[in-house]
Image (cartoon, rainbow, N blue to C red; front, side):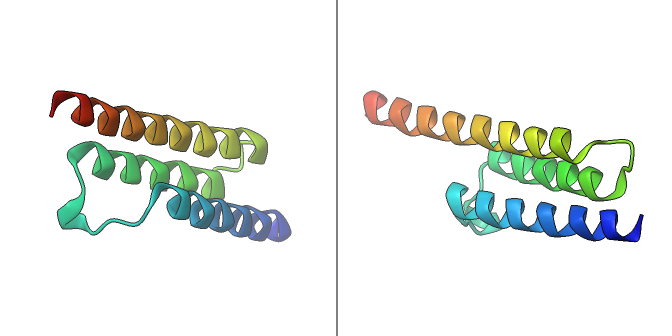
Length: 86
């Protein structure tokens, strides 16, 4: 049980580290409401992965990856939309 928690923490930390590097670092003042909301959601999903023993590690990682991919896609769409409008 203790080993499982350690594995969950390490996996969650590594995935969060990689995803934040991919999504780019922003200061709070530079974040849109969507970026802020997405960061809170990713943190919540990661916390659930670490603390909820009924959540499988695979499902937790899939949820983290899926939410992050959707966030990146929305970000790309927003950038392309702003370019077309200007």
